[in-house]
Amino acid sequence: RRPTISSQTLANGTQGSSGAFGAASNGSAGIVSGAGRSSPLSNYAGAVKRGEYSDQLLDSLPVLWIFLCVSTDQRYQLLWPELLAMATAQHPDQLDTVSVLQRELAGGILDKQTGYASQAMSHGFIDHMRLVKTAQKLCERITLLSETESAMGVHDLRCIIEEYSRLPVPVRMETCGLLAERLCLAAIKSVSDDQFTASVRQTWLSLHALSPHAVSAAVVNAWRSASEATKPRLTVQDIWLDPLVIFRSDYRIFQSASLVDILLTVLGEFLVLSRSTMRRIFTLRQKENGALKRSHLTAIIQLQESSALQMLIETVQYIANEDARWLVYEFIHARFLEQRTIQKLVHFQAYSIDSILGMVSCVPSMHACSEFIPELLMQSAPRLQLFAVKLASAITTKYPIPANEGMAKEVILPHIQTTLVQIAGTSTAEKLSISNAMLSAVVDIDSVFPLIHNECKRLAAAVKDSAVDKARGVLQAQASQTQQAQQLIVAQWIGCCEHVLAIMGTSDSS
Image (cartoon, rainbow, N blue to C red; front, side, top):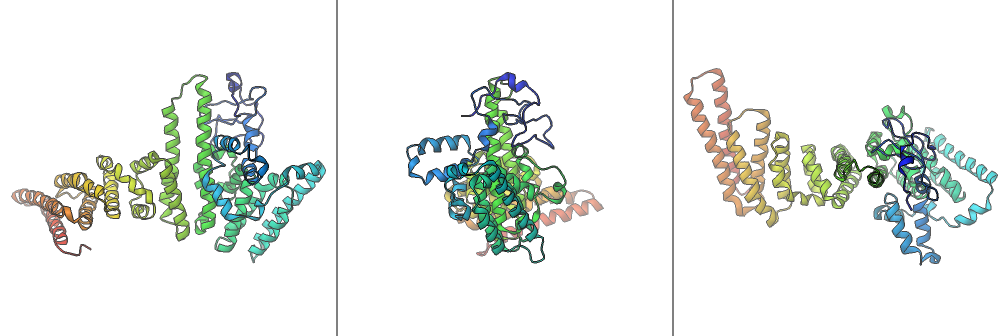
């Protein structure tokens, strides 16, 4: 079970051991590691109570490997329900449905691991160290092969992995992080070789089952961008404290669907690890003083996860590989289904308008945005208004269902008419962008909802009448260079409204 940390030990400073995770560094000032995991919520660490297991020990357990072994062994049938419940509760970052299914589909050569206990007992310490050195030499061979002119191929990789798979499981658990890092570095250099990167992904999934956190951290360090590579290595603690550091990666990753799949798996793992760890530490701290409210913690987690999704949305439009783009969209779709609150938060923060059509076309859960579009349209900021109109137009035309037709008639069109009547005749760049988007939305709505055709025509006519009224006021004023420019602007508004009316009067609205 998870440890309960006492107030006395939490108050102790930096005397804890660094252990497998090491001390937090770079951007983690005031955060230390100890027997309990470091906390972003307060500056404490220390040992656990006597008779209880430390976080360090629990996180070092090969939970996923145990899960895969026990699930196929008939001897553990009676323990299976309790073991599964405990593992999913204590290690949600390692045991999720998607990752388990991915490994079953990959079926890597390293997945055929049996006889852990017998192998562990049959080798002494000296033999173990000798085998660890053998594994390290195999990792060095990957580096040497990847630096040759011919680069590393699938055959070379298979030969090394077959030799590595013969090593005892304890040796592989100790060295899988190093092997994963060397493989990911080699994959970057051969990113255009789809067959090789696919083999790297298959091998990586098998290594990940041995020690998920170590292997995932190795990926983040291997793929750091040139500007980040000069900084100290990131520990597991550094990454779950700020999962957004994963985005500081080499841009070449996005040229390969297999490498993008690895990156998204690591991102999902650390987002879940960060969420579960912060909640657990929050529960411990509440027993001490309760200064931080649960609503504050929820806001921190939601802001972190929504920021990760926004960065993916902004990035996906620059990905040329179609398969890689679909993987990113699927990841976003899964997160939206998992947490509808995050979906709403992402859209109220807004993102690039150029990404809206891609999101609506490729993310099925985007249809749920119709639930909060009326609220989004009421935002006062011009940037959010423009974003809301574009999103409303894309959603209603993609999903021309009765509910969206009612929303268009009762909410979207009245809002557009009120806004356009007020700004008709303006020459401000921001307002012109909003007006163009709104008039385009009216044409789109008219094309997919024939039953509200008359409402769309009345809207365009009302905007035209407003522009005509302003034109009369301009003509009555004394002629000047400024007034002439204003007359031209108003004339363009009138002509645009007439053009929209003409489009809606034809059978082909394209």
